[in-house]
Image 1 (cartoon, rainbow, N blue to C red):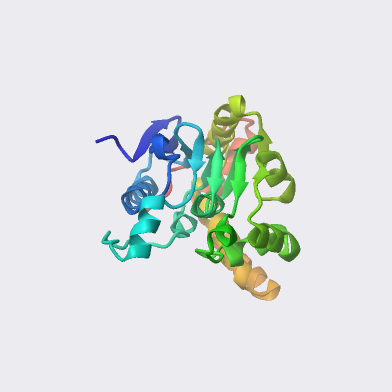
Image 2 (cartoon, rainbow, N blue to C red):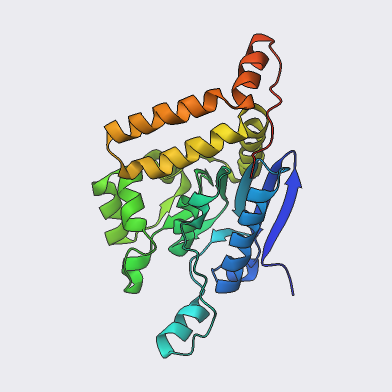
Length: 259
């Protein structure tokens, strides 16, 4: 049986690839469990500094597998429920970059946007799809989309379920960058390697937590918390190394993220 999620590590960048190309990487409970397990392993692995997530074949993830949806509808679904939510990647302390290579629909779109950064092929097809399947804005997408692109644009994508291409997704703010499909992995991995070489793992972990959790705080609270976090940063070796490498005009040698 083929691996549901492929894993390869190079230059401190771990690439995870959804591997159900014959089903356009449609989401199943076993694939989700394997994905989340690999993310947690990567978080603990000092050799991994950045994670890239993509899909095998012509899709990133086409949403929930229709066989799963049929089983839920007729009451025969019996897969063990994973208690980790779709937003679990936001809790992983290392940066996760989605490389959306093709179809990104429904639950697949949720998983792309649960990553910290998104690079997309400019012709990749995106859609929330939910309203066109008689469903609702699932897995926190009604919370996330307005924060990313504003209420009016979020309403458009959720109510219409229309299909948009990667170029528009980037223009709207769903993706950091849209590039030709042939260059997607090259550019995504180059960006990931730059983070792995030049950015402190400890700093990235704290900044990631700040960005995701400060969304629910007032400006005063976020600012006060940032002062405490800054004082903590002054005591870490990463700060001394960051200053020294800048003054000495050399690449930094930051320590791996501590457990």
